[in-house]
Length: 614
Image 1 (spheres, rainbow, N blue to C red):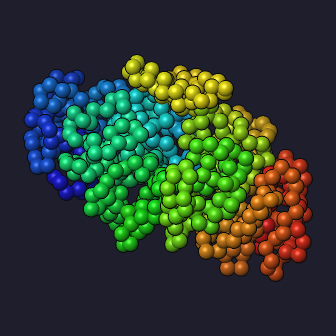
Image 2: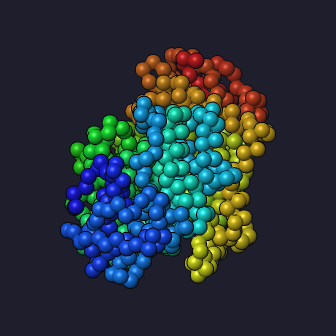
Image 3: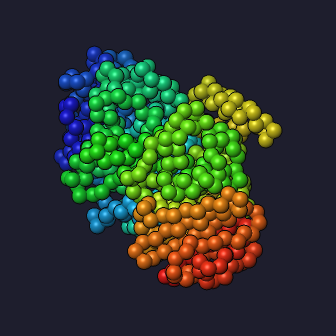
């Protein structure tokens, strides 16, 4: 039982083709474990096996039955590996058979990672209904926009129906208010029919506070380390083997049983593990085995705040083998360059020079002293390809962690929004959008929860107010528990029919199309990138090439027009996009042709993209 079989579930309740249930529970501290069926008034005893596992095979439980796990004849709890919680995190679990779904994606092949154009979204606020089914109705819209990979914020069961998803407490159960397991399977199948890959955000660094009963079963947590969210999950302390298996099984389930194409793993720098084989490396080896057996391709993407290539280096180089990572530093440098705040972690960023460094080096801090951290920070990422880095001008964190949840649309001019979008899309990295930015959605993305524990709800309210006490001049922090806070964060789809939102949508469409069509933008060769920043002008010239195809991107972050010289090579250049052109509601268009012999006039807060092969 201590060996992991990547082909099937070996935790919780699973059904074979004959309808017999296999039940496995890990509880090394229990003296007795049983499963109770309240609607059938039946108790099923489990037998103790090695390594703290309890097991039985039975036909007494059927798909659809509600059940709870009983520890030592006393404590009734939801199943830690429950696949469904129809009555929420405190209610009974529901037995379901994930293998009965009729998939139609047998011809689907995951998109090559280097071709990903990501779109991060939150199920509850992406549509008015806030469900997987309603998300399916927007897939044609996403296709029309040009994105080919949606990144769904966490869907593991959380308290109530309103949450970002990072308070999940039952990692195997798909949020009931979103549509549950079958709803997610149906969505993934529909995405694959449309040629869209699905990335699922998963949280393996902490558990939410409400409905977190794992400690009743075994040593899921350790006091060896602390995290910003409380005790650390136990990946390397006594009794950790069952915990490591629990989360590895969870990862394999999403790939195998839900056909998820990639995961985005939340804040892996908060995973504390000094084992000889780090848990991420172990997970990667298991995923490799799964891919070998199924022939399907899956990617592991991490959120990482360490600038440490060990996480993304290949297994054969003693790395953890992660396929890609978010790069917050590109975002920070871009925000400061665009005139954003310089407080908190932004204080480390100078603006233009750091943006130029991000384009060439991925990490801004790769061995320099970081004033904000008060230490030398980072390592150079010289040999890691561009496809390993995901960049963005906004995401759920950078928007939602502001007191008022303002998007770029509320913080920057229309012209600067277009420039920032262009700056992301022409990078030699993978671009990611945050839902609604493509049409300049004005609604905020606020922090919201729906805890059912009154004391916890009040603690969250007070904590949010205290966090932003220094910002009292901006007003009160919105109440995270209020339903209005959640509703204010929903996208306003009707705006797509109005300007300037319609114009911004067409602009993003054009940017994405150029990204796909121009070889110099599509090929993510970090060795074929030149950047020339001009601090005095606040301009940046980005030159990328592939074989004989060249692209020159001229960016002006200042509030006045600037004369900018182009790189000196023989070809004349043709303009393929000018964010300042009247068609994008800009002030004036630059000439259609340019070369290295004369300077180009670049309008304030704008980007021009030239190519030698138009």
